[in-house]
Length: 142
Image (tube, rainbow, N blue to C red; front, top):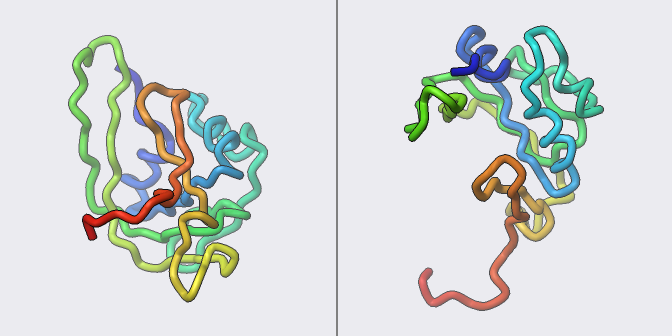
């Protein structure tokens, strides 16, 4: 089984991390940033992303990300794996949000507008993503 990604190790070792919400505009760079690089090689460099330090935690923020959460690490949760001997472990990093950066361009009436943010979600395998958007019809389920 493979080693944890640098982002996971960094969060566990430093106790902090930033979650830079991936948007449609950043999707290709995000995909590059997930490459299994050797320790010490920069995912930022590979993805051609610039970064700057966060304000509250010692972790980088992706320049241009319209929504970023600065977090204190709480725990790592392993995702069950049907073939643990052949596949890398998948984990979710859980943290407490200490602060956030939100660009005005993704707001409508003071609220995050998903149609402006255009966040990306993984659907299944490593290359299957979708852009999250508001439903085109009214839902009676609210």
